[in-house]
Length: 414
Ligand SMILES: C[S@@+](CC[C@H](N)C(=O)[O-])C[C@H]1O[C@@H](n2cnc3c(N)ncnc32)[C@H](O)[C@@H]1O
Image 1 (tube, rainbow, N blue to C red):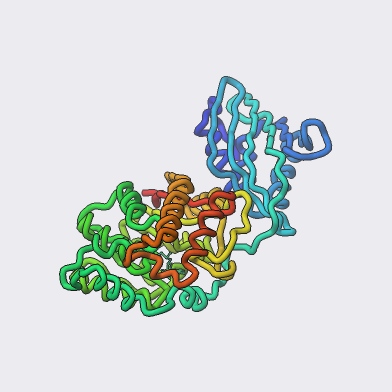
Image 2: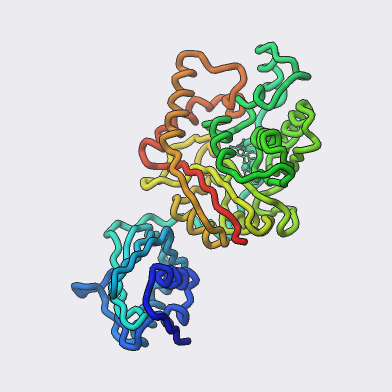
Protein backbone atom coordinates (compact mmCIF):
# COMPACT_ATOMS: atom_id res chain seq x y z
CA UNK A 1 0.00 0.00 0.00
CA UNK A 2 1.48 3.33 -1.02
CA UNK A 3 0.82 6.43 1.06
CA UNK A 4 0.70 9.89 -0.55
CA UNK A 5 1.31 12.69 1.94
CA UNK A 6 2.39 16.24 1.10
CA UNK A 7 4.68 16.52 4.09
CA UNK A 8 5.53 14.60 7.21
CA UNK A 9 3.98 16.18 10.33
CA UNK A 10 3.98 15.13 14.02
CA UNK A 11 0.58 13.48 13.35
CA UNK A 12 2.17 11.34 10.63
CA UNK A 13 5.00 10.41 13.00
CA UNK A 14 2.39 9.36 15.59
CA UNK A 15 0.71 7.16 12.95
CA UNK A 16 4.16 5.66 12.22
CA UNK A 17 4.66 5.05 15.98
CA UNK A 18 1.20 3.44 16.21
CA UNK A 19 2.16 1.07 13.38
CA UNK A 20 5.27 0.04 15.35
CA UNK A 21 3.09 -0.73 18.36
CA UNK A 22 0.66 -2.73 16.20
CA UNK A 23 3.67 -4.62 14.76
CA UNK A 24 2.19 -3.80 11.36
CA UNK A 25 5.05 -4.12 8.85
CA UNK A 26 2.99 -3.20 5.77
CA UNK A 27 1.75 -0.02 7.41
CA UNK A 28 5.31 0.86 8.44
CA UNK A 29 6.70 0.39 4.97
CA UNK A 30 3.98 2.63 3.52
CA UNK A 31 5.69 5.56 5.27
CA UNK A 32 9.12 4.82 3.75
CA UNK A 33 10.71 6.01 0.47
CA UNK A 34 11.83 3.41 -2.08
CA UNK A 35 15.51 3.99 -1.26
CA UNK A 36 14.94 4.22 2.51
CA UNK A 37 17.61 3.60 5.13
CA UNK A 38 17.27 2.29 8.68
CA UNK A 39 20.18 2.76 11.07
CA UNK A 40 19.54 0.52 14.10
CA UNK A 41 20.40 1.54 17.66
CA UNK A 42 22.87 -1.35 18.01
CA UNK A 43 25.35 -3.16 15.80
CA UNK A 44 29.04 -3.24 14.96
CA UNK A 45 29.07 -0.16 12.72
CA UNK A 46 29.69 3.36 13.96
CA UNK A 47 26.06 4.25 13.21
CA UNK A 48 24.60 0.89 14.25
CA UNK A 49 23.59 -1.81 11.75
CA UNK A 50 22.61 -0.11 8.48
CA UNK A 51 19.75 -1.46 6.36
CA UNK A 52 19.53 0.09 2.88
CA UNK A 53 16.58 -0.23 0.48
CA UNK A 54 12.98 -1.31 1.09
CA UNK A 55 13.60 -5.05 1.38
CA UNK A 56 16.53 -4.64 3.78
CA UNK A 57 14.66 -2.07 5.89
CA UNK A 58 11.60 -4.32 6.01
CA UNK A 59 13.78 -7.18 7.27
CA UNK A 60 15.48 -4.86 9.78
CA UNK A 61 12.13 -3.72 11.21
CA UNK A 62 10.88 -7.30 11.43
CA UNK A 63 14.08 -8.20 13.28
CA UNK A 64 13.19 -5.75 16.06
CA UNK A 65 9.95 -7.63 16.74
CA UNK A 66 11.72 -10.99 16.37
CA UNK A 67 14.19 -9.91 19.07
CA UNK A 68 11.49 -8.35 21.27
CA UNK A 69 8.12 -10.01 20.54
CA UNK A 70 6.40 -7.60 22.97
CA UNK A 71 8.25 -4.52 21.70
CA UNK A 72 6.36 -1.38 22.68
CA UNK A 73 7.07 2.33 22.40
CA UNK A 74 5.16 4.47 24.87
CA UNK A 75 4.94 8.13 25.81
CA UNK A 76 5.84 9.16 22.25
CA UNK A 77 6.51 12.83 21.46
CA UNK A 78 7.36 14.18 18.03
CA UNK A 79 8.60 17.30 16.36
CA UNK A 80 9.30 18.15 12.75
CA UNK A 81 11.45 20.89 11.31
CA UNK A 82 11.45 21.03 7.53
CA UNK A 83 12.93 17.84 6.13
CA UNK A 84 14.07 16.57 9.53
CA UNK A 85 12.13 15.30 12.54
CA UNK A 86 12.49 13.50 15.86
CA UNK A 87 10.32 11.05 17.81
CA UNK A 88 11.16 10.49 21.48
CA UNK A 89 9.77 7.46 23.33
CA UNK A 90 10.30 4.89 26.05
CA UNK A 91 10.97 1.47 24.64
CA UNK A 92 10.04 -1.70 26.53
CA UNK A 93 10.67 -5.20 25.31
CA UNK A 94 11.49 -8.72 26.51
CA UNK A 95 14.08 -10.95 24.83
CA UNK A 96 13.59 -14.70 24.34
CA UNK A 97 15.71 -15.39 27.45
CA UNK A 98 13.33 -13.26 29.52
CA UNK A 99 15.71 -10.34 30.08
CA UNK A 100 14.02 -6.99 29.66
CA UNK A 101 14.83 -3.63 28.21
CA UNK A 102 13.14 -0.44 29.37
CA UNK A 103 14.88 2.57 28.05
CA UNK A 104 14.39 6.06 26.64
CA UNK A 105 15.37 6.69 23.08
CA UNK A 106 14.57 8.55 19.91
CA UNK A 107 14.42 8.31 16.15
CA UNK A 108 16.05 11.02 14.12
CA UNK A 109 14.36 11.18 10.72
CA UNK A 110 15.16 12.60 7.30
CA UNK A 111 12.11 13.09 5.06
CA UNK A 112 11.69 13.34 1.32
CA UNK A 113 8.49 13.95 -0.65
CA UNK A 114 6.28 13.37 2.40
CA UNK A 115 7.95 10.07 3.29
CA UNK A 116 10.66 8.85 5.63
CA UNK A 117 13.97 8.46 3.80
CA UNK A 118 16.14 7.75 6.85
CA UNK A 119 15.19 6.45 10.29
CA UNK A 120 18.16 6.66 12.60
CA UNK A 121 17.46 5.08 16.01
CA UNK A 122 19.16 5.79 19.34
CA UNK A 123 18.62 4.19 22.75
CA UNK A 124 20.26 4.86 26.13
CA UNK A 125 22.94 2.28 26.87
CA UNK A 126 21.31 0.73 29.93
CA UNK A 127 22.03 -2.79 31.26
CA UNK A 128 19.23 -5.29 30.63
CA UNK A 129 16.78 -5.89 33.47
CA UNK A 130 16.50 -9.42 34.85
CA UNK A 131 13.83 -11.78 33.57
CA UNK A 132 10.51 -11.59 35.32
CA UNK A 133 7.45 -13.79 35.38
CA UNK A 134 5.24 -12.78 32.50
CA UNK A 135 2.05 -11.03 33.52
CA UNK A 136 0.04 -12.17 30.53
CA UNK A 137 -2.34 -15.02 31.11
CA UNK A 138 -0.62 -15.68 34.43
CA UNK A 139 -3.06 -17.51 36.69
CA UNK A 140 -2.89 -16.19 40.24
CA UNK A 141 -3.76 -18.17 43.32
CA UNK A 142 -6.77 -16.00 44.10
CA UNK A 143 -7.64 -17.97 47.23
CA UNK A 144 -4.16 -17.37 48.64
CA UNK A 145 -4.51 -13.65 47.91
CA UNK A 146 -7.97 -13.53 49.51
CA UNK A 147 -6.58 -15.41 52.55
CA UNK A 148 -3.76 -12.88 52.79
CA UNK A 149 -6.21 -9.96 53.01
CA UNK A 150 -9.09 -11.51 54.91
CA UNK A 151 -7.56 -12.16 58.32
CA UNK A 152 -9.27 -11.60 61.64
CA UNK A 153 -12.73 -10.34 62.49
CA UNK A 154 -12.45 -6.93 60.87
CA UNK A 155 -16.03 -5.92 61.66
CA UNK A 156 -15.54 -6.64 65.37
CA UNK A 157 -12.29 -4.65 65.36
CA UNK A 158 -14.01 -1.68 63.72
CA UNK A 159 -17.00 -1.79 66.09
CA UNK A 160 -14.69 -2.03 69.09
CA UNK A 161 -12.66 0.98 67.88
CA UNK A 162 -15.87 2.98 67.31
CA UNK A 163 -17.01 2.09 70.84
CA UNK A 164 -13.69 3.34 72.23
CA UNK A 165 -14.32 6.58 70.38
CA UNK A 166 -17.90 6.72 71.73
CA UNK A 167 -19.33 6.75 68.19
CA UNK A 168 -22.81 5.21 68.10
CA UNK A 169 -23.31 2.82 65.17
CA UNK A 170 -26.68 4.23 64.22
CA UNK A 171 -25.42 7.76 63.58
CA UNK A 172 -22.32 6.91 61.54
CA UNK A 173 -21.28 8.93 58.49
CA UNK A 174 -19.06 8.12 55.51
CA UNK A 175 -16.45 10.43 57.07
CA UNK A 176 -16.57 8.63 60.46
CA UNK A 177 -15.52 5.35 58.83
CA UNK A 178 -12.98 6.92 56.48
CA UNK A 179 -9.89 6.33 58.68
CA UNK A 180 -10.37 2.57 58.28
CA UNK A 181 -12.34 1.88 55.12
CA UNK A 182 -10.04 3.55 52.57
CA UNK A 183 -7.50 0.77 52.66
CA UNK A 184 -4.38 2.29 51.16
CA UNK A 185 -1.54 4.16 52.87
CA UNK A 186 -2.78 7.66 52.09
CA UNK A 187 -6.33 6.68 52.93
CA UNK A 188 -9.22 9.10 52.58
CA UNK A 189 -7.16 12.08 51.28
CA UNK A 190 -5.95 9.93 48.35
CA UNK A 191 -9.52 8.92 47.48
CA UNK A 192 -10.65 12.57 47.64
CA UNK A 193 -7.74 13.60 45.43
CA UNK A 194 -8.62 10.92 42.90
CA UNK A 195 -12.32 11.82 43.03
CA UNK A 196 -11.45 15.48 42.35
CA UNK A 197 -10.14 14.34 38.96
CA UNK A 198 -13.00 12.02 38.00
CA UNK A 199 -15.74 13.20 35.62
CA UNK A 200 -18.63 11.51 37.46
CA UNK A 201 -22.16 12.89 37.02
CA UNK A 202 -25.20 12.30 39.24
CA UNK A 203 -27.05 9.10 38.34
CA UNK A 204 -24.09 7.48 36.60
CA UNK A 205 -22.95 3.94 37.38
CA UNK A 206 -19.34 3.42 38.44
CA UNK A 207 -17.39 0.21 39.14
CA UNK A 208 -14.83 -0.16 41.96
CA UNK A 209 -12.59 -3.15 41.17
CA UNK A 210 -11.03 -4.55 44.36
CA UNK A 211 -13.21 -2.33 46.55
CA UNK A 212 -12.05 -3.70 49.91
CA UNK A 213 -14.32 -2.47 52.71
CA UNK A 214 -16.14 -0.16 50.30
CA UNK A 215 -15.11 3.21 51.78
CA UNK A 216 -14.19 4.74 48.40
CA UNK A 217 -17.41 3.35 46.84
CA UNK A 218 -19.59 4.92 49.55
CA UNK A 219 -17.69 8.22 49.40
CA UNK A 220 -18.07 8.52 45.61
CA UNK A 221 -21.74 7.52 45.79
CA UNK A 222 -22.43 10.22 48.38
CA UNK A 223 -20.28 12.92 46.77
CA UNK A 224 -21.50 12.47 43.20
CA UNK A 225 -24.97 11.04 43.89
CA UNK A 226 -24.07 8.13 41.63
CA UNK A 227 -24.46 4.35 41.81
CA UNK A 228 -21.35 2.36 42.69
CA UNK A 229 -20.88 -1.38 42.29
CA UNK A 230 -17.89 -2.75 44.15
CA UNK A 231 -16.26 -6.11 43.52
CA UNK A 232 -13.67 -7.81 45.70
CA UNK A 233 -12.07 -11.21 45.89
CA UNK A 234 -11.91 -11.33 49.70
CA UNK A 235 -15.18 -12.70 51.09
CA UNK A 236 -14.78 -11.34 54.64
CA UNK A 237 -14.16 -7.86 53.19
CA UNK A 238 -17.27 -8.10 51.01
CA UNK A 239 -19.33 -9.10 54.06
CA UNK A 240 -17.95 -6.25 56.18
CA UNK A 241 -18.37 -3.81 53.27
CA UNK A 242 -22.06 -4.68 52.98
CA UNK A 243 -22.57 -4.40 56.75
CA UNK A 244 -20.97 -0.95 56.76
CA UNK A 245 -23.06 0.10 53.75
CA UNK A 246 -26.18 -1.04 55.63
CA UNK A 247 -25.11 0.89 58.76
CA UNK A 248 -24.92 4.02 56.60
CA UNK A 249 -28.24 3.13 54.92
CA UNK A 250 -26.65 3.36 51.48
CA UNK A 251 -27.79 0.01 50.03
CA UNK A 252 -29.81 1.89 47.40
CA UNK A 253 -26.65 3.40 45.96
CA UNK A 254 -23.83 0.98 46.74
CA UNK A 255 -23.72 -2.73 46.01
CA UNK A 256 -20.66 -4.80 46.91
CA UNK A 257 -20.17 -8.31 45.56
CA UNK A 258 -17.67 -11.13 45.63
CA UNK A 259 -15.70 -11.59 42.42
CA UNK A 260 -12.39 -11.51 40.60
CA UNK A 261 -11.31 -8.37 38.75
CA UNK A 262 -9.78 -10.57 36.06
CA UNK A 263 -13.20 -12.09 35.29
CA UNK A 264 -15.68 -9.25 35.63
CA UNK A 265 -19.24 -10.63 35.78
CA UNK A 266 -20.76 -7.67 33.93
CA UNK A 267 -22.01 -7.14 30.40
CA UNK A 268 -20.01 -5.10 27.88
CA UNK A 269 -20.49 -1.34 28.15
CA UNK A 270 -22.22 -1.41 31.56
CA UNK A 271 -20.36 1.36 33.44
CA UNK A 272 -19.76 5.08 32.97
CA UNK A 273 -16.43 4.76 34.74
CA UNK A 274 -14.28 2.32 36.70
CA UNK A 275 -11.45 2.64 39.17
CA UNK A 276 -9.14 0.35 41.06
CA UNK A 277 -7.18 1.62 44.04
CA UNK A 278 -4.12 -0.33 45.19
CA UNK A 279 -5.31 -3.66 43.85
CA UNK A 280 -3.16 -4.38 40.80
CA UNK A 281 -0.09 -5.29 42.89
CA UNK A 282 -1.92 -8.64 43.28
CA UNK A 283 -2.99 -9.02 39.65
CA UNK A 284 -0.92 -11.60 37.80
CA UNK A 285 -2.68 -11.24 34.48
CA UNK A 286 -2.52 -7.49 33.90
CA UNK A 287 -3.40 -7.73 30.23
CA UNK A 288 -6.71 -9.48 30.94
CA UNK A 289 -7.44 -7.27 33.96
CA UNK A 290 -7.20 -4.10 31.84
CA UNK A 291 -9.01 -5.71 28.92
CA UNK A 292 -11.89 -6.61 31.26
CA UNK A 293 -12.09 -3.08 32.67
CA UNK A 294 -12.13 -1.73 29.11
CA UNK A 295 -14.83 -4.19 28.06
CA UNK A 296 -17.33 -3.28 30.78
CA UNK A 297 -16.96 0.47 30.20
CA UNK A 298 -19.26 2.48 27.96
CA UNK A 299 -17.54 4.36 25.14
CA UNK A 300 -15.84 7.42 26.59
CA UNK A 301 -15.94 5.96 30.14
CA UNK A 302 -13.03 6.75 32.46
CA UNK A 303 -10.67 4.28 34.05
CA UNK A 304 -8.58 5.27 37.09
CA UNK A 305 -5.84 3.30 38.75
CA UNK A 306 -3.61 3.81 41.75
CA UNK A 307 -0.87 1.32 42.55
CA UNK A 308 2.63 0.69 43.73
CA UNK A 309 4.50 0.18 40.48
CA UNK A 310 7.93 -1.41 40.30
CA UNK A 311 10.79 1.06 40.74
CA UNK A 312 14.06 1.29 38.78
CA UNK A 313 15.89 -0.89 41.32
CA UNK A 314 13.12 -3.46 41.78
CA UNK A 315 13.30 -6.28 44.35
CA UNK A 316 11.09 -4.73 47.05
CA UNK A 317 11.65 -5.56 50.70
CA UNK A 318 8.88 -7.69 52.28
CA UNK A 319 6.56 -7.99 54.15
CA UNK A 320 4.37 -5.38 52.47
CA UNK A 321 0.63 -4.76 52.85
CA UNK A 322 -0.13 -6.81 49.72
CA UNK A 323 2.26 -9.72 50.32
CA UNK A 324 4.25 -11.20 53.20
CA UNK A 325 7.13 -12.56 51.13
CA UNK A 326 6.64 -11.62 47.48
CA UNK A 327 4.19 -14.43 46.74
CA UNK A 328 1.07 -13.13 45.01
CA UNK A 329 2.86 -9.85 44.19
CA UNK A 330 3.11 -8.82 40.54
CA UNK A 331 4.56 -5.36 40.23
CA UNK A 332 5.29 -3.74 36.88
CA UNK A 333 7.02 -0.47 36.07
CA UNK A 334 5.00 2.66 35.29
CA UNK A 335 5.95 2.48 31.61
CA UNK A 336 4.86 -1.17 31.47
CA UNK A 337 1.54 -0.11 33.02
CA UNK A 338 1.21 2.57 30.37
CA UNK A 339 1.97 0.01 27.66
CA UNK A 340 -0.60 -2.42 29.09
CA UNK A 341 -3.24 0.34 29.19
CA UNK A 342 -2.43 1.41 25.63
CA UNK A 343 -2.52 -2.23 24.59
CA UNK A 344 -6.02 -2.57 26.07
CA UNK A 345 -7.13 0.43 24.00
CA UNK A 346 -7.21 3.19 26.62
CA UNK A 347 -6.37 6.71 25.50
CA UNK A 348 -5.57 10.08 27.14
CA UNK A 349 -3.42 8.30 29.70
CA UNK A 350 -2.40 10.76 32.42
CA UNK A 351 0.07 9.31 34.89
CA UNK A 352 1.19 11.01 38.09
CA UNK A 353 4.12 9.98 40.26
CA UNK A 354 2.66 9.82 43.78
CA UNK A 355 5.87 8.50 45.41
CA UNK A 356 6.59 11.62 47.49
CA UNK A 357 3.01 11.75 48.79
CA UNK A 358 3.06 8.08 49.79
CA UNK A 359 6.49 8.40 51.41
CA UNK A 360 5.20 11.34 53.48
CA UNK A 361 2.11 9.34 54.54
CA UNK A 362 4.21 6.33 55.58
CA UNK A 363 6.60 8.59 57.52
CA UNK A 364 3.68 10.20 59.36
CA UNK A 365 2.21 6.77 60.22
CA UNK A 366 5.59 5.51 61.48
CA UNK A 367 6.06 8.60 63.68
CA UNK A 368 2.57 8.27 65.14
CA UNK A 369 3.13 4.59 65.88
CA UNK A 370 6.48 5.33 67.54
CA UNK A 371 4.87 7.96 69.76
CA UNK A 372 1.96 5.60 70.54
CA UNK A 373 -0.41 8.07 68.87
CA UNK A 374 -2.15 5.82 66.34
CA UNK A 375 -5.91 6.49 66.53
CA UNK A 376 -8.23 3.62 67.58
CA UNK A 377 -9.69 3.51 64.04
CA UNK A 378 -7.15 3.11 61.26
CA UNK A 379 -5.90 0.79 58.56
CA UNK A 380 -3.36 -0.65 61.01
CA UNK A 381 -6.38 -2.68 62.26
CA UNK A 382 -6.46 -4.43 58.86
CA UNK A 383 -2.75 -5.21 58.53
CA UNK A 384 -2.31 -7.34 61.63
CA UNK A 385 0.75 -7.61 63.86
CA UNK A 386 3.19 -7.00 61.02
CA UNK A 387 1.68 -3.55 60.29
CA UNK A 388 4.78 -1.66 61.57
CA UNK A 389 7.19 -3.75 59.46
CA UNK A 390 4.96 -3.46 56.37
CA UNK A 391 4.80 0.31 56.77
CA UNK A 392 8.57 0.69 57.25
CA UNK A 393 9.28 -1.51 54.21
CA UNK A 394 6.76 0.38 52.09
CA UNK A 395 8.58 3.65 52.90
CA UNK A 396 12.05 2.17 52.38
CA UNK A 397 11.04 0.67 49.03
CA UNK A 398 9.95 4.07 47.71
CA UNK A 399 13.07 5.78 49.05
CA UNK A 400 15.37 3.16 47.51
CA UNK A 401 13.62 3.19 44.11
CA UNK A 402 12.29 -0.36 44.56
CA UNK A 403 8.65 0.66 44.17
CA UNK A 404 7.14 3.60 42.34
CA UNK A 405 3.60 4.62 43.35
CA UNK A 406 1.47 6.11 40.59
CA UNK A 407 -2.01 7.42 39.92
CA UNK A 408 -3.36 7.02 36.39
CA UNK A 409 -6.49 8.34 34.74
CA UNK A 410 -7.40 7.43 31.18
CA UNK A 411 -10.51 6.70 29.16
CA UNK A 412 -12.06 4.36 26.64
CA UNK A 413 -12.27 6.17 23.28
CA UNK A 414 -15.62 7.32 22.02
C1 LIG B 1 -5.11 -2.53 49.57
S1 LIG B 1 -6.70 -3.19 49.41
C2 LIG B 1 -7.54 -1.82 48.64
C3 LIG B 1 -9.03 -1.84 48.85
C4 LIG B 1 -9.78 -0.67 48.24
N1 LIG B 1 -9.50 -0.55 46.82
C5 LIG B 1 -9.48 0.61 48.93
O1 LIG B 1 -8.75 1.43 48.34
O2 LIG B 1 -9.93 0.81 50.05
C6 LIG B 1 -6.54 -4.35 48.07
C7 LIG B 1 -7.83 -5.07 47.74
O3 LIG B 1 -7.69 -5.72 46.49
C8 LIG B 1 -8.45 -6.89 46.54
N2 LIG B 1 -8.06 -7.78 45.42
C9 LIG B 1 -6.85 -8.35 45.19
N3 LIG B 1 -6.89 -9.09 44.06
C10 LIG B 1 -8.14 -8.97 43.56
C11 LIG B 1 -8.79 -9.51 42.41
N4 LIG B 1 -8.17 -10.32 41.56
N5 LIG B 1 -10.07 -9.17 42.19
C12 LIG B 1 -10.75 -8.36 43.07
N6 LIG B 1 -10.18 -7.85 44.17
C13 LIG B 1 -8.90 -8.14 44.42
C14 LIG B 1 -8.16 -7.43 47.92
O4 LIG B 1 -9.09 -8.39 48.32
C15 LIG B 1 -8.20 -6.16 48.73
O5 LIG B 1 -9.48 -5.90 49.22
